[in-house]
Structures are given as structure tokens and as C-alpha cells.
Length: 257
Image (cartoon, rainbow, N blue to C red; front, top):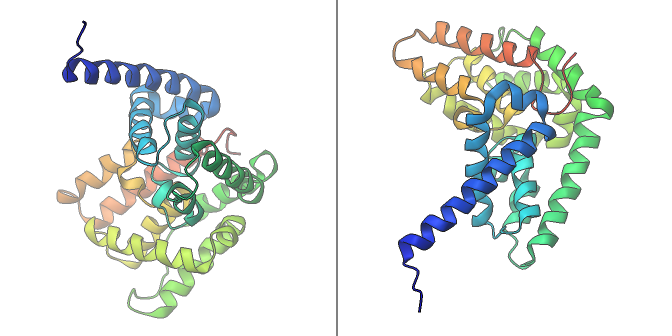
């Protein structure tokens, strides 16, 4: 009788995952061509491998649900499943009372369609308008961090920049996003009103953990310089690269205008 050792089985499974990840990379080139071309195949492969592993943690093993999970990573940020802006994602994924993965995948798909309609708009019109507003935002002129007016002013600006998304996310989730951004700004030595505002804008636009998202390697590269750059220089670098990213288009299918 032929016996397959555990090591051989693991190698076989990894080869299958590798092949599926390559198929996902090819799919993402069609799903989001502008974004795929911008970040390149190595980053796409990282996203695919990470998505395969994390989708499996939620009981997604079929090709369709796994591919949908990775599409949502591109649409909403690689950590959409724990992002306070999208509480529905974690609720659906963690609902083990619905053990059928296709049912949960269909629920996720319904929410994705709602996001497209409500937040991106026809032909991405809402998102394109928000990108134009973000380009004009200097992240300056905020009150002191320990004052309530800072939070109010920052949330007001987010609502002005992208009203459709701000309304979709809601004030309670935006407040959580701001709290998370404040902690990240402190960690990355950008604990000024402008720094917190910039990190919040990054999370609002790209996902709350965009600092470690393989889709945005330029963020991790910039933030790694915090040990050698003055905070003002670091913020200028991050903001400049953020604006350059926006100039070349969103993470979605449409090109920015």
C-alpha cells in the first residue's frame, strides 16, 4: 500500500495553494487592472497567499468564496474583516450558526454590491470626487489633540471630503477609526494633530491597517524611516506618496479623474 507521509501531504497542499494563488493574481489583474499594475505581481501574490490563509480561518475552502474574500481585500483593504468601518464583514464571517460557506459568501457579496452603489457611485463618481478633495487637503489647521474640537473638526473634514463614505460608515465607527489612527500615529512618531489626521485619512481611504497591508508597500517603506527622519519630514514623505498614489487612481476598477 502506498503511504503518503505528513510532510509529503503538506508539500502537496502548499503546491496547490501556490497554484491557486497564481490563478488569483491573474484574476486580480482583470478585477482591478489599475491597482494591479500599480503594485505589481509580487505584492498581488502576497495578497493572494494571505487571503487564502485568512479565508480558511473563516471556513472558506471553496474557490468561489475564497476568491470573493480576496476581492474584498482589494476593494476594502486587506484587513477588511476586522476594520471598524465594515462591522458587517466580521459579523458575517464569524457567524458560525450559518455553517454553509456559500450562504455567508452570498451575504458578503450583497454587502459589497451595497458598498459599490452607496460609496463608490455610478462609474465611481463619488470616489473620484473624494480623491479630488483629498488631493486638496493639507491636514493642517487642527486644534490641539487633547481638545474635543480636534475630533469634531477631523470628522467634519472627512464628511466634507467623502460624504457618501462618511455617512455609510457612520459616526460611531469613524470614532473608532480615529482612536485606532491615534494609536498608530503615536507608534510611528507622528503624534501631532496633522499626523493623526493624516493617519486617519489613510485608514479612511485604504483600510484601517494600511500600514501593514501588502497592497501599499510604500506606506510601510515610509514609516520604517521613523527612526532616522524628523516627524515633520516623515509626514511630508507619507503625504507626498499618498497624493502620488491617488494621482494614479484608486484601488478600484475606475481610474481617478
